[in-house]
Image (cartoon, rainbow, N blue to C red; front, top):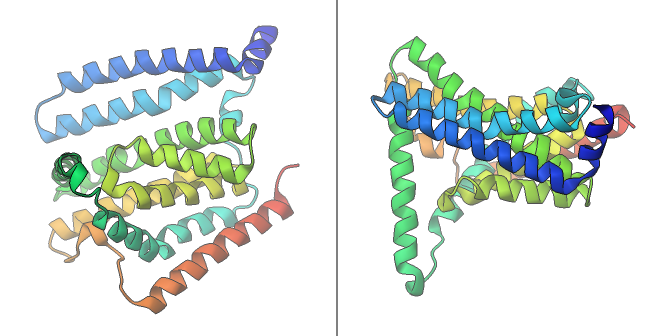
Length: 286
């Protein structure tokens, strides 16, 4: 068995084949469950949670179970190089909000020109449809509903997407190319795979933050926590807004046009990433 795993680990083609087969089978199961649960909004949430787990969590687990001696550890479930990096990651999610919203604003103003007017209209329609569904899913007025949303909308996607895009993809790219190229490419694919053009830039920016903190901390727990905080903050703000406890524009929460605040956000964000790199140099595994 050890020799078999060694051969699989050394064969890129076989690993890709195993992953694609696992992804195909798990996606079909997830799609079947989702179709079965096409009822009220609660059933849709359950279906989305199961589908997300089948697409993003199960295939990486299956791949590494077949090809690694220590699948969980090699996927990235290791102790961070420093506990401070967990805190830095969480802080980054908030201090970078003005930059994220600036990128959102730029992205929303992009257009393809008259020649691609029909394509642009289609993308906008898809974006509005996805936005309407998300808004419906976020509208809960009970604490139990909030916890359920945190599980289905925040936690499961955070675990699954970090397993797929940082645990598998980024680590595979890092073994073959410069780490900055690996982080950039995994962030690009992470954003692209959501198929939401008007959220591409801010989502890619998020992918860059997650990618660098995963690399510098050496632990998937860091990027999962960051991803959960990012998703969870939106869930909590939507809950408070729906309850009438606050009045905010959820889609542009943390936005500002103040140049000084934008500059401060940029400086602090870059500074925290540089600080994270120093923690890796000091405490990182050799």
